[in-house]
Amino acid sequence: MLLYDAPNPAPNPRRVRIFLAEKGIKIPTSELSIIKGEHKAPEFTAKYPQGQLPVLELDDGRILGESISICRYVEALHPAPALFGTDALSIAEVDMWLRRVEFTLMNAVGQIWAHTHPFTARVVVPQYTEFGESNRPKALAAMTRIDEALQLAPFLAGDAYSMADITLLTTLDFAAFIGVAMPEELTALSDWHRRVSARPSASA
Image (cartoon, rainbow, N blue to C red; front, side, top):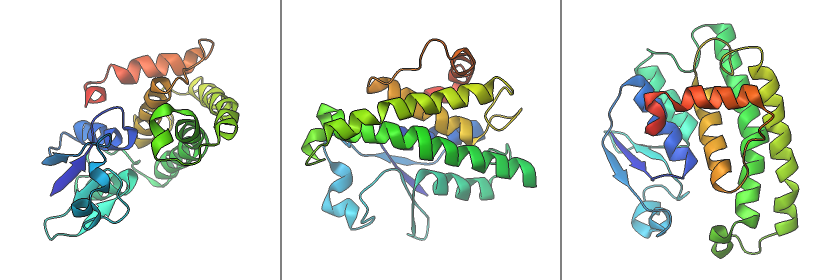
């Protein structure tokens, strides 16, 4: 297998790297530069027309895109340690929190990034700056709801670190990179962030 990767601050490739590090799995990688547009180059889009990263190329040449789909594939091959849950309830809870993080926090952060950041101005034409800024309160509201949940459990889906936590970590770190920092008063979220950032996999 070959993983087409991109360096930080790209959050989606980092999700896969953290997941693999938690699993203790090494997959050969080919690093592409998003800044240079290498993921949009004809030789890559011929392989993966969406022109997005990360991408996993299987040994038979088939291609898997989307970070969560890649991680689910690897989880099926290497079930332990489980990062998508271990029984019906925990699997559903991990999936529930994955969707909540992606649909609320990640979506809002993505709109802020696309429509307000100078880097994206060359590819998002036109940028709707007012719309982008309107997502800032949505991102902060999502962080608040997550903080409330983390007051009740050490991790998003309960007692075990999961793919939901990996997704939240990469989203929060990217949010901070584009200027959407966690409010100081969200102490449960801040404590969670400190703990998961101290895991060796977080440096992947």
